[in-house]
Image (cartoon, rainbow, N blue to C red; front, side):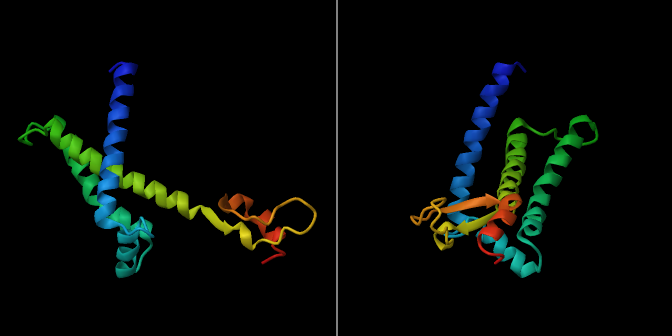
Length: 148
């Protein structure tokens, strides 16, 4: 595969991912909680949403593993079709994208800057802004908030 062919493949795959995750969100998520089903599953199973998601993803990862083994095992018939690969790899990639989004969200502290007293030294403003900061930045925010 050439670099151009790979770039074309990647753009097509990314568009499929966008379309699939958008379509599935209408079925499995709520307007307020994109990870609704994983959060509910975690509650039912007594685990974290990440573990609930990984449990659901495991089925798809096993399917991909089975396809990989079928490639070179003459005893496994019929051989996987390109359509099977597209479906199974697509499912696995989608779950990994959802897991990545969960991890990104977990490692981000959400702060409503409207609640921060910026003082009168002119450093901040009182217009406020909802934003996110990384946990690495949290200690400095904590000192701004007076140790709260």
